[in-house]
Length: 438
Figure 1 (cartoon, rainbow, N blue to C red):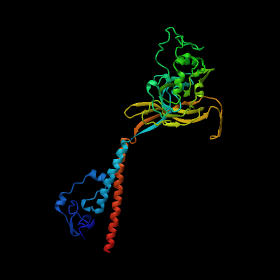
Figure 2 (figure 1 turned 120 degrees about the vertical axis):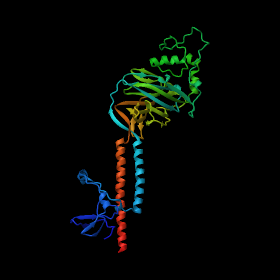
Figure 3 (figure 1 turned 180 degrees about the vertical axis):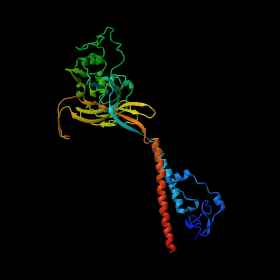
Figure 4 (figure 1 turned 90 degrees about the horizontal axis):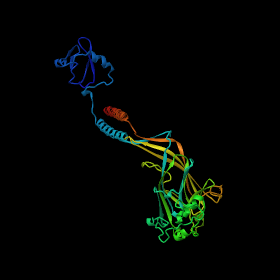
C-alpha cells in the first residue's frame, strides 16, 4: 500500500469503509492506518472537519460540476501548450466577433409606393462630339400632357460649346446671337416676322425672334439667309463656324412622377397636327455630317447618396450615321435610405434597356429585323415609374445579445475542444510509458 494511491478502502473498528486519499492535507478522513481494526485519525483533521449542512447535502445531488482536490491534478507540458494555444484562439475569435458586431450593412425591404403628387428631379451630363450646340435642343413630355420644350434655355441647364477634342470654348462665345443692341437701326424700326405671328412687342427685330415666331406656328426656319435680321447678325456665317464643334449639356430639371420621356434632338421643336416634331432642315442639309454619337457622363433620378451606381454613368455610343435614333427605356424605382443616426435620404434607382434604329427604315442584318420608316434622329430616354418602393435600412450585422452569445460560444467551444485534445494526448502518453515499463 502506497501513499500515492488515488483511493483505498479500509475497515474501521465500527466495520464501516473509509476512503483513504493520498493528500497529506485532507481534513476529513483517516490519514494513516496501521491496523485495519484500529484507525489512527489526526486530531487536527477531526477538529477542522466542517459541520454537515442539510442544504449542502440536499443540493449536492444536482451538482454537475464535480470538484477534484489540488493534489489529484496532474500538470503536463502538453497541457500547457494546449492551454496557451486555446487562449490565443479565444482572443482571436473574440476579436472577430467584435469586428462583426461593429459592421453595418444596408438591409433592403420592398413595399408598395403610396406617395402621391411628388416630383422627380433628373440630373444629367451628356456630351455630343459631333453635334453643335446651336442645333441641339432638349424637350420633356409626359402622359399627363405636360410639355417642356427647349428647356435648354433654363438657368438650371448649362449648354457648353466644345472643340472637336472636347475642350470647352470661351464662355463669351456661348451665345450664337449677338447680345448687343443694333444701335444703327432707327428708333422706330420694327422688323417683320415674315407671316408668323409677332411676339408681344409686335416686332421681330432679331434673328432669334424670327425663329421663335416660326416655331410657334410650326414652320421650318432654314438657315435664315432670306431674312434681314439673320443677315445683319451673320447668322449663317456663325452657324458654319460652329458646324465642326461638339456640345455638352448638363444640369437638372423636374418632371411629374408619371410615365414620360425626355430627348435630345436637332432643331427647334413645335407641335403640328397634335404631333411633336422638330425642324430638321438645318441638321439634314448641313455640309458637315452630323451624328448623335454621345457620351453619358452621368444620369440620375434624384440625388445620389454616394452608395448608388447608375447603369448609364459613363456609357458611350458611337456612330457616324446622321439618321440614327437611340432609345433608352428606363424603369425608375423609388428608394429610401434610413440610417442608424435617424437621417432619411429619398432618391430613385433605375434599370435600363436600349435600342437603336435608322429612321430611314430598312433591314438590320445584324439583328435580323426590318425597321419601319419614320421618327426623329436623336437620343430619347423613355422612363416608367415602378409601383414598388425599396427601403434600405442601416443595421448592425449582429445585435448586442448576439455578441454576448457568440463570445460565450467561443469560450465554451474552445475550452471543450481543448479538454478533449489534452485528454487524448495524456492518454496516449501514459499508454506509451506503460509499454516502455513492460
